[in-house]
Length: 271
Image 1: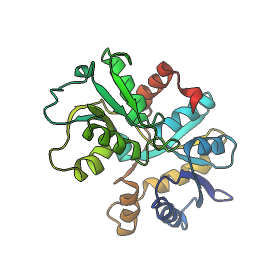
Image 2 (image 1 turned 60 degrees about the vertical axis):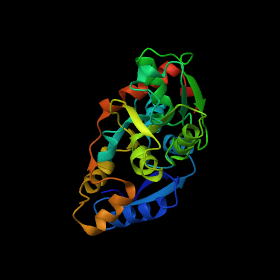
Image 3 (image 1 turned 90 degrees about the horizontal axis):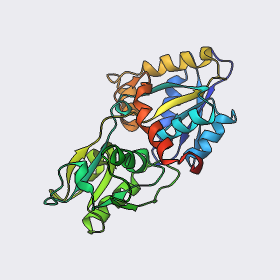
Image 4 (image 1 turned 135 degrees about the vertical axis):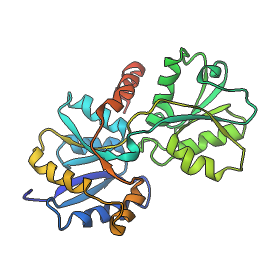
C-alpha cells in the first residue's frame, strides 16, 4: 500500500482521454493502490516527466517505451498492456486493380507514410521494406507529418495517407491495423481501397515505470488493473473507451522489431 497515490501520465491525443482516466481513477479509489493522473500534450514531454520523477507510471506507446529503455539503459519495466497491444500490425492498402499482391511489388511505387514518430505508419513500414530487400531508393516515400508528438495515436496522418491514395498522389498507404479496421475500412466508399499486405504482429502500448519506483508500490496497482472485468458493466465502459477487453501482462519480445528499426534508421536522437 503506497503512502500517496501513484501518479500516472497519459497523452491527451483525443477528448475522450479525460473520461477514460477519470473512470480509471474512480476504479482505483477503493482499491489497494490509489492513483491520480496527469495529461501531457505529447509523448516526448511525458517521457521526460517519467525520467525526472514527476510521474510514477507512464502510459506509453511502443516508441515511447523504446525511448525510455534506451534513455535509462534498461533501468525500467513494463507493467501491463491491453490485449489489443499484443497483436498489433501494419497493413498496406491500395486501390483495387493496382496489381499489387505482396510487399516486394512496391518497387518503383509510391508509398504514403504517416507521421515519422508513428511506429505503425512510418518506422516499422520502412523496417518491413528493408526486410523484404527494398531500400528507400527503391520506393518513392511520401511522408505525412500531420500529428507529430502523438506517435500516430490520433490516426490523422494515416487518414491523410489514405487520402493521398484516393487522390492518386500515392499508390499505397501504410496504416496501423486498428486504423484500417476502425476508420479506413468503415468510412470509405465500399470497394475504394483494399488491403494487400499485413505485417507480422508486434506489441504497442504499455504502462512503464522506472526501476526507482519500488515494485511493492506498483504491484498492487497492476494486480487491481488486471482485475478489471469485461462482464462488469462499470468496468466495461472504461475498457471499451480504451479499446480493450482485458488488461494483460507485458510481452517484451513483441518490441524486438521496433528496437531493430530504431537502431537501423538511426532515429533515436530525433525524438
